Image 1 (tube, helix red, strand yellow):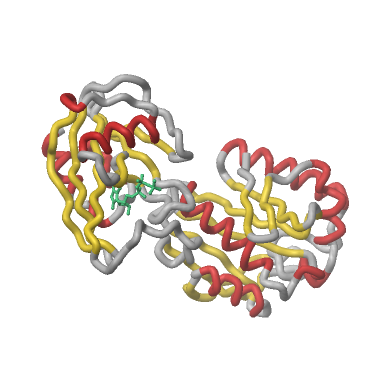
Image 2: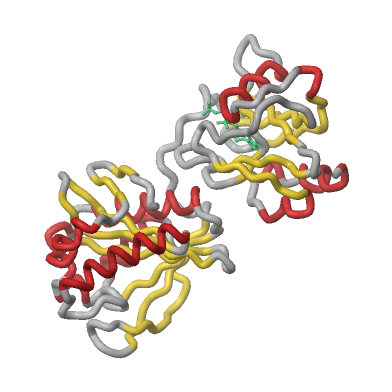
Length: 320
Ligand SMILES: Nc1nc2c([nH]c(=O)n2[C@H]2C[C@H](O)[C@@H](COP(=O)(O)OP(=O)(O)OP(=O)(O)O)O2)c(=O)[nH]1
């Protein structure tokens, strides 16, 4: 199921059967539909029902996530991402009813869906295409962080035949992040002490957590842990973080120092001791909206991690 997301005055939520009449009224408009590749014109009323059922099926199987764009309780358009798992990318598409153009709403809705996709789907980039005669939509993509990546041709059912399109791509770094929660009182080059641990299970797999949307570095995988607070020892912080984030009890005598990261991260210098832990109480649960994965040492590189973590991977592989 597509989640519910908010973006300023807009809410993005899964499409429902009851959206069909509004969807049909908005999209059965030549000025809207001529810019979209797949819908026909005129747009038959029962196609709205069929398409909504299709979006729900696709979300259920995890192949695409479509959202109704809602403003003041009314449907004003749609945005969606279709996943290509083998290429680790997803294609972003969106449209708004004509009365809602020119107010920055497409940028809000498409930007929100793009950030959600980057943080939540197994992808490294987003793609999109825009009809050659749709500069407004190209401007929306550029504002979100997409760059032009060439020209192509796509069938446009409404216009008949293939038409030229501009292709766009966006990497994780390019997607304009939401204003992230500030790192604590970051005076330039302050050293930030973060503790983390590699939990290792009996099959020699390592637990990774995916940073949830809204946090800096959203969508990247990391070793669970967090900032050491004033008055805490690193081990106390680790025990607290594991309890808060994963509902797991670590005992101080079961965590062993392994190695550490010391790296300039721009706004702060990261100092991160990495501990190893093979014994704990409880089953790790994603208590803060993060995704969890038990990963075989040989597959750690398939999980994109923050830059400072990268040198840790060969060390862990050697150990395991
Ligand atoms: N836990 C963890 N943090 C990492 C890793 N690699 C890495 O660069 N970091 C960075 C990301 C953040 O800048 C910082 C950790 O901060 P955080 O925001 O996750 O800490 P926290 O759990 O205390 O979060 P919060 O309560 O402040 O939201 O360390 C890692 O492997 N594990």
